[in-house]
Image (cartoon, rainbow, N blue to C red):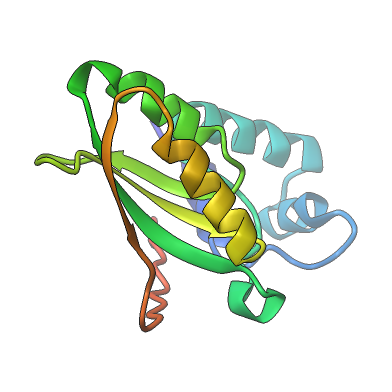
Length: 150
């Protein structure tokens, strides 16, 4: 159950974490609390699935990173092991099961084409992989999703 404090905290951390040396202390001050309380509540929210990650968004293309969407056709019995192996790559930002022949899809961000190709080659060799589609974006759309909690 989310408290009113949790909701206020979630509203702030979605898009308004200050760029200061102690951001959670600054958030705590805004909420009339102390830094330890903010950190404890963020841990609780993460541990209970309300928060997946806290971190910045960068313009990856300006940093010479490349991204792609990858669809895998995986033997059903191998799906959990393949999903875990894919999730172990630091550049995987999303990974989800889908219905159909290509039943595992993930997004990959890599520091250049060579690194991306290395990861894709390694993934293609995982046991249970029957096929792979590399689907790089041809146009970038960025949707800013923010959930206002009351």
